[in-house]
Amino acid sequence: MRNNLKFTFTILLVLLLTGCSGKKEKEKSGKLKAISSITIINDIVKNIGGDKVEAISICGVGIDPHTYKPKPGDPRLVSESDIVFINGFALEHWIEEMVHNAGGNKKVAAVTDGLTPMTDEKGYGDPDPHAWFDVKNVKTYSQNIAKALIEIDKTNEAYYTQNLNNYLVKLDSLDKWIKSEVQNIPVEKRVIITSHDAFRYFGRAYGLEVKGLQGISTEAKVQTEDVKKTIDLIKERKLTSVFIETSVNPKLLEEISKETGATVGGTLYSDSVGDEGTFEGTYIGAVTHNVNTIVKALK
Image (cartoon, rainbow, N blue to C red; front, side, top):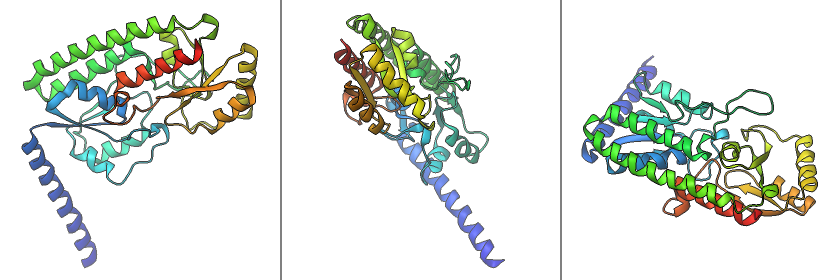
């Protein structure tokens, strides 16, 4: 009994000290603490929040969010945050328990609010979470992020609104550039073969056919029939390139490349941006890299 009381007291003391430390840190920095589930969302938060927000991503660079296993320190990040940004569309089941344990008042904003998801074409009806590959959808992401920040920090509304407007201009420019670049690919070659179905929004928005070995989640197991269909498609359409992804094991696609003679056209960013401090370490930079890689390989 005495040991149980000791343990309970220790836990309460740790939580109390953690809370005090987090509060003092926030008072010192004067910044809101925003936690995002993935690096793509985190970069958008940085653009909207600017120097008023400390933005942290739970999934690091190159980490697959579909199969992510929370680290011991993740619940504390969520607990100490002022707001949590998630993608939604069933991407982050692993974050639900952390938010629940952080208390009922934790503000959570799904950046896909207002969007209608594409669904799993293999018939399961699951929402496809990769909405960020249609740049117009990221305008909605950005607007939802700005709205959520303003709700908890009304004082800096004008600042967030200005950052939002500046970022929307950049997104419009990116969207227009992608449409122009895709025109450089012959119509019959506008086919992207990837590890998993992360690029269907991209294909729909910019006029490319997309085929992934796996479904919309990397948790799905690749079936022998899927591999055969992919090989047959490459040979039948005389496709010359396949693409691997930064956050997915490339081994199977590399084997298909050897089997069909289609070269690996390059590595695409799918569920993560690139290394911090690089151009590809931003959403706009990662998408620009993808488009340049696809166009160079297919044209």
